[in-house]
Amino acid sequence: MKRIELQPGYTISRVIKGGWHLAGGHGNISEEQALVDMRHFVKAGITTFDCADIYTGVEELIGKFRKKYKDQFRSGELSPIQVHTKYVPDYNALATLKKEDTIRIIDRSLKRLGVEQLDLVQFAWWDYQFPKYLETAVHLSELQKSGKIRFLGVTNFDTKHIQEMLDAGVTISSNQVQYSVLDQRVEKNMTALAKEHNIPYLCYGTVAGGFLSDRYLNAPDPVPPYENRSLTKYRLIIDEFGGYELFQEALQVLRTIADQYQVGIAEVACKYILQKPMVGGVIVGARNRNHLESLQKLDSFALNQNDLAKIESIVSRSKGPNGPFYELERDKTGKHGSIMKYNLNED
Image (cartoon, rainbow, N blue to C red; front, side, top):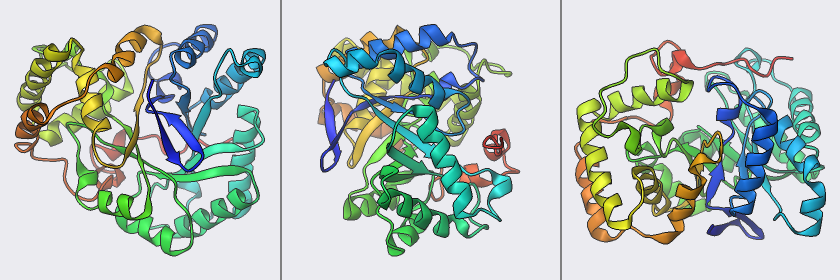
């Protein structure tokens, strides 16, 4: 699996194993099976894991994985892994958050993962009306200087607020964003900032929770309730894109391209984003290793200008999503924001 130097001296696999799907809301998880699956991903070269303090049980699970296979890591049988977690203060805490609160959560992540330093902490903030995000970013930067955090990233911030943090002297090493055939909001003005300050994208939603796959080609529009939280979220993005009919046209185009390379729609959707400027990696929320063989095919082909033009012809007809990145999701009363869980860090 191809790798990229995200920042000087720090390389990751370009496909990152997502952790949200292991946190409940996506069906029952066998811990034993999840640990075995993690080993298969690492053996296949997918050594980078994405998780969060609010993904229930996932930091602990990765910590158990490290412990269970520590001898194989030590001997070199398993390559070293990189764990990207997040710091997501509860909505209820945003008005009163103190440095001690931040230290407590970071220390908890260190303990759960069984490490002395976190590889990458991605900072998230629910609501800009609470201005402590800037102070909190500085606190995280201080924890980085003290050695608890190696690299500091952000997730779901817009360009304006990232610039504020940079102006405050915070070094930002990555930016986790939703980026796919169906959602290209980051291209409006964020990519220019990313290039200027070397802030690579780590992209989620690249296969839209599974919608961008052969499973949905020519399939009827699924009727709610959907089988998991990802489908609930990304079905709303399809509406923003232009509706289920245009989405089906996008799948048809992706399928014709996939036929040329003998891969699936999902692989073309991932490759399309991997070839975008400033993209460091794509986060694929694989609950198990069923898709591992398909993911390994990502290294076997590259999209040419003709392929990209076909995809762009559909994207150019999309209606959205519009606005600054993540603005839709920040409206707690709107259809995107109302499905979020805002207070998962409460002890």
